[in-house]
Length: 204
Image 1 (cartoon, rainbow, N blue to C red):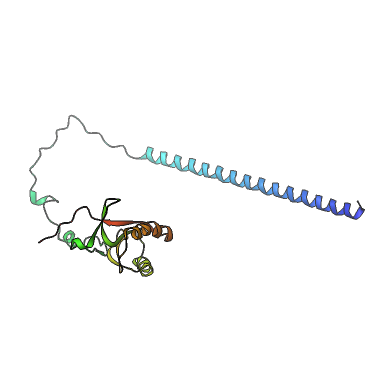
Image 2 (spheres, rainbow, N blue to C red):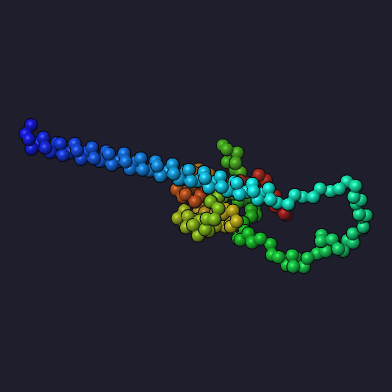
């Protein structure tokens, strides 16, 4: 090996040693800073605990009742003076909590219901129920409906749930596939269900 290569190798070796020393030194400094921070936090916590104890010790103790003292005679309370017997007109004016949009499409005839013999599920034809993450804008659900050929026919804003209906007829298998595909494709969709019907009763 030539002297030139030896010098080059020594330079690389020295540079590596310097880098290792610097790296170890930086690590030691970080450990020291973290230890100092933890120590400071413990000291502040101890000071705060001492202040709380001193404050509690200086508070005036509650005077205990003298068993020899005679309790005052109870006087009948006028019902009109009780807070619960007198209506508060200002309280009555307070509006109920706004739950936002809340509507759904009802089943009006047996023609809208399908029964799958294999699964025993009775459901509304061409409909699905979509449950979204709380706070999901309705516009996002509408975008999904535009892509899959459906429309929103029911919506509960406070829970971000939607009832959708397809413009074209869908088989049970097609609807079942969408209950799996839609939550996988859209992060804001938590789950998709059939709009099942346990019993249907119509006024004649």
